[in-house]
Length: 373
Image (tube, rainbow, N blue to C red; front, side, top):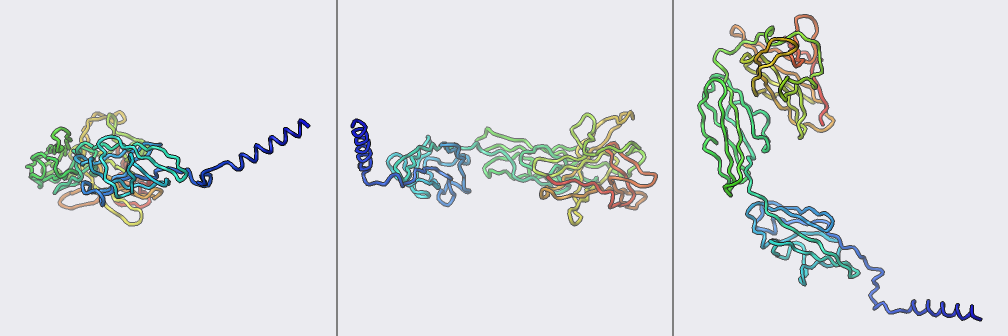
């Protein structure tokens, strides 16, 4: 009898639970999703911006950095969410519509279909004014390395008949101030000439200085003496060979995928050089003199050398790039082309200290190569 009463109590309890009032909302069938998938300030909705600015979302925190001098007290946000409704305080928010003040942290309340909610914190900061150049060029010679706003030191090599040069930079910020040497012709002496372009941000505090070393070749410097420039030595892996006491490798890969190629020659004996490279068809990039060094190789006496370099542009990852180096030697009034290749056949060839082979003619099978990253 006691068991029967117990079973009846359990049955009655189950029936009471089954008929509890849910308010008719059907919450069990409604989504509880309340995520912000994207957040940005789009230029089309914000006259203070020239480009769309995307926020970074980490957990329930959104950070956005806008350009210097942006008025952040009146911005319109564009966002996507899985929630049913978005509010700031008691005001409902629509993507691309509502204007808000972001000078302090703003709390976005995301409400799901089932009525549950969560808060996203939005923090907007103003970037410092730019003191970087977005471009740099010269009316003679070739910049080395290729221009990058974060690289501040460059070199240019020009022939002796170039007596003036104009180097011109353009700042990212049109309100930044550039120093007087920018875009101004500079008279060149033989040897090294220094041009400095200072970029001062519009706040007058942040600044960056770019230095360009221009080397004007000496008059009559036209001959290359192979037996002085290069030494017979055992073959080495050029990728791993460096100039002692310097950071220069024969070949080095940059972070953007471009590749620097370097050449070592006796001081003031090389007048011109170019890297000829190809993936399908030959292309040419001129080499420039970078600096000079006093060094000794493999027990030879200390000698003064020039280091020349050029940059092969980045190629699609996995692409094989072939290249060799062409030198122009003016001898007895005649212009002759000579080549540095990977390997040499026959006698009378030389290896320089960076394992570059001097060839009197192009040898396609002797091209260096590497796989683009």
